[in-house]
Image (cartoon, rainbow over all chains, first blue to last red; front, top):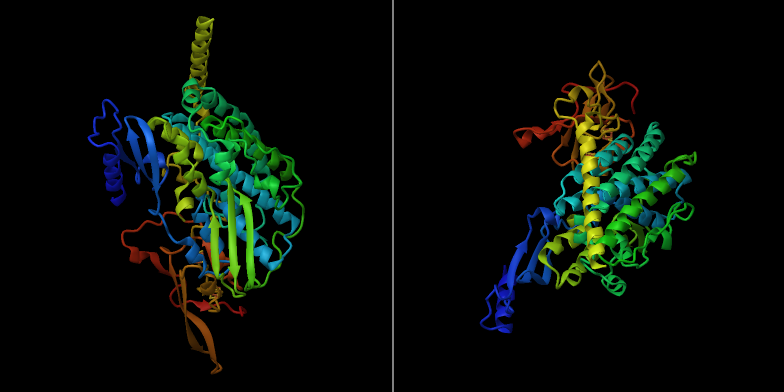
Length: 387
Length: 158
Ligand code: SF4
Ligand code: SF4
């Protein structure tokens, strides 16, 4: 509330006597999108300063869903804190858990059995597909198309069923534990994933047919929300947001973890730098994820699914950092240990926060309708930003 | 040249729209491909996998015996204080005192179904049930006592 009055006061200083919106004579108008608004995909509050229909400034206000997860993790042991991170970016909860498990393993210096590594990567990629599918459906809905949402959820449901069978939950699985995975894969797992690959390959073309080629969609996407490579890097954007601006930042390629250096896949880069480029990155990533799963699903090595670890995990004194590539970008986990059973400090680097920070730069001078389109391609998950 | 480009653009636009409409029409006429199920009408075919984490339960055998020794490993493993183990001392027939559980209190409203208590339990006394319809009218009903009244520890479980 304070902020809004401030903005109005500022504007009257800049243009005294302003207020004639019809002529657009330097008058500013402040509207609020959110915190409860379907297009913000959560409790995000955007204060938008408008001149007519042109956006002058976008200020995201955060903190509506702050749960102090980092502080909470300091009172939990190294086994317990992992499940909390599923509640940050709930659409890539597997990958968040993976990052935390990797960081603890780094501190413990345990070798993860090859079987667990492959299972982890398959799960990560399935999560990525599910996440991108939800994004695709939700973004098409932002632009006014309702049917794609159901198409996306149809395939996503298959992934959820696979997850449910092996991990026991559909969204917050808590399947990664320090040293491997919590349980071995379900006997049906391989067969069901193969069925899914066949199903998905026939359906992903429908996505292109329904949305990618659509003229309304293209016109609303192309040239909207321009973000140059330099800006993407300086704002700290990662993931598909940065790769749509040709900034190479795929952690799976640059700092391979688990078996990512043994599988063949491309890092998708698009040169458009606009909303459509970011859209295309994600659509093409879907096919790459399927390619990774295809290579691994028949080659899950035999052996343990979990390395032997002590009952109470204690990290040596020091600092540990590990990073993984979630569906939205780089997710980093930083642990400071004093040698005890609980971390001294935990800090998460979440991709959504940096990606959101570029929104203002991206959309300044654009129209308000484009804001929704540009925001849709950022793929924001608000609990990830606020933590 | 401008007019050719214009017509081409219009034609492309119309074609892209028709393409999308064709797919909508396809699903409109092919009812078999619709996979939507109506809950709760689908209850008969709604089989949840055996690993599904619905709530923590303690299985008892036909003699009303469970396998819990009261070691509190589950209580320590739980990240949010969902489980509280209340122990008592039982006088054995030979006069010796033995630790046993009085109550294993479980707060379903706090549980995040993380499975950590289940893997921590050394005697597999608790497991996950596949129930998922947990809504009640009063939140007090969500606080459960997992061991049956009058239940005992199974012979041979240490
Ligand atoms: S499932 Fe997790 S939250 Fe629930 S009682 Fe067990 S350890 Fe606690
Ligand atoms: S349920 Fe298992 S872990 Fe918990 S007190 Fe009983 S025996 Fe120990």
